Every structure is written in C-alpha cells, then in structure tokens.
Length: 434
Image (cartoon, rainbow, N blue to C red):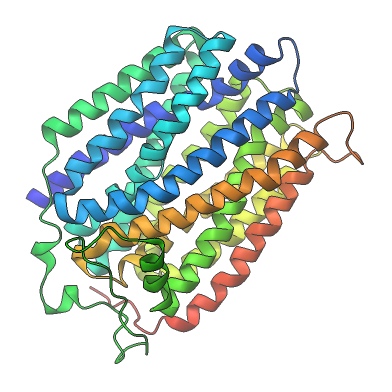
C-alpha cells in the first residue's frame, strides 16, 4: 500500500507538471508570430527561432539526461526530480510578465537552458521511480498509466488554454508549475533504488544467455566515474534488444520532433488556425491518448506483449503523420489526430522493453541513455526539417506542397516501424498469466 501511495504522489506531480507545460502550447505560436511578424499567418523567423531552440535544447538534454539519470541511481530520484521541476518555472514567469519581442527573446533563451534540465530528465526520473516500485511483469502497464496521467495533464492544460485569455495563460501556467514543485518536495517519498525488488527473480535481467542468447549489459559504476559516451555505446552494444530499441527510438524521435516543430505553423499557413483551433485539435489528441494509456494499454500489454503494441503504435503514428501532410480540408487534421489512440503505445512499450534488460538499481542510467538518444534525434531534426518547413510555407517554394516537411517526417516514422519488426525476434520470454 505504501508503494501505491508513493506512485499516486508521483502521478500527481507528473499531472501538474504536464498541465503547466502544455497549457502554453496552443498560445505560443500566436504569441511568437504576433511578436515577430505582426498581422501575418506565416513567419519564417518564428519557424527558425523554434528550430534553433529545439536543436540547442536537444543538445543539452543529450548531455544532461544520462548524467541526471545516473546520479539518481546513487542520490535518489526525488533529490534529482527537484532540478527539472524547478527549472521549468523560470521561462513561464518571463512571458507571464509580458509578451513583447524583448520578452519573447528572453523566454526562448531561458527556455533553451531550462529545457536541457527539464525536458528529458522529468520523463527519465519518473520512469526510474516507477521501475523502483513495480515488479517487471507489471512494469509495462505502470509505464502506460504514467503516460496516461501525463496525457491527462496535457488534456487539462489544453482545456484551460482553450478558455483562458492569452494574457492569463502564462501566469496560470507558472503558478501551477510552482505548485507541482512544492507538492513534490512535501509529499513524494524517496525510493530505495529498487532494493525492495532485489530478489533472485526480479533483479536477474531478462537477457541472460539461458533465455535469449544475449550477454547482460553492464553499466558503469558512479563510484569510479561519470558515464561517458563510450560507456553508453558499450551498454547498447552488449544487448541486441537494446541496440534495436535505441535505433527505433532515434528514428521515431526524429519523426516526432520534425512533425511537432512544423505542425502548428503548417496549420496556421494552410488553414489559418488560431489558438482556439490549436487547442481543440490538441484536446482531441490528448483525450484519445489519455483514454488509451489509462484504459486500453493496461489490458493489452499483458495480453499481446510490448513488442506487438510497439509495432501497432508506430504504424498508427506514421499513418497519422502522412494524413496531416496531405490534409485537403480543415477537418482532416481533426480526423488524423484520432490515430493518437494507438500511437501513444510507443513510448511506454519501448521504455518497458529497455527496463527489463537492466537491473533494478540501474534504471536511471538506462532510461537516461534512451532519453539521450531521443535528444540526439531532436538535435538533428531541426537541421533537416526547419529549412524545409520555412521553404515550403513561403512564397518561394519550388512546388506547392505545404505539408512536404511533414511527409518527410512520416517517412522517418515509417522507417522506425520497419525496424521495430526486427525486435520481435529477440523476445523469447512470453507474458505469464497472473
């Protein structure tokens, strides 16, 4: 019961954190374009500024997240959770004070720095906390519930943004972020690093030679050194499943980053969407995701396994990206967003697969490594997709196809789906009925 109470407190922290973070998304596109290109629906400067922010944040996350994850293995999850939850407050306060061009530039600079500590670390540490509290056979469902709670925060934040005036959106968001940090410090209990699960069955990695023919990955100990890039590469190379999972994560994150960075600017240029329509679209996607992760995934994961769910999620993801890219009417994006009900399986499934390949006291490093790979993809994504988005939304496009950059992201997602099929061959331990 104590572990359940600790998980509920973590879920409350995750809900509040994502409620605050996603509340500003429907408004930030309008605020950025209005500050940089008043009276226009298309602004190349805004697109490039967002791309630069994404690339620099991804570079910092690549370095910071594996370090934070490994430090949490030694010093505790709660102690390190303080870093991302407090750093996320600062950029919101800037736009809560004003939305002029000066405030906007200050917001992006501070957001780049704070995002290095909050974007990847919050997810990494939350997953490691859950892994400390939940045994392996229940972990996929628990990760799904965590993602569902985060999606519920996304939905709630989007609803709030839909009805709040822009002048109050950032003030409310900053206040909720501060409440989340205080709640975490007061109510969340530190974990034991998975010590309660450390018996012969629960600590033996599922990659032993007797089961799937892989050698067990060995993580560097923090007593000797901080993990280097070479340590992370060695970890991935020691397990075929981890190697394949890392490749799938890379291409899926490359597609997601390119898609998300272009989507709102594309919809504004193509269909003249505004803050309220962005909020409606995100609300559909968030509601579908929350429903799927909270109700469908806990039932489907034990029945068919994470690998098959991963394949289903990746197929749905590339389908809905392609639909966005060829949208011929304003209602098509709303229809495409319903595919999120299956696409949300991707992250909990891939994290559960990785979690089962390492020991309980190594979850922080392993999840940080996967998050770092996703961050590396988010560095490369703006380099490829930002110029494409700006070009095809401008009047100088070589041919008329405003969704061209989004279609390119769809091909990256299709490649991730193709590669994920090969992961099925490395899984030889079926789920047992409880």
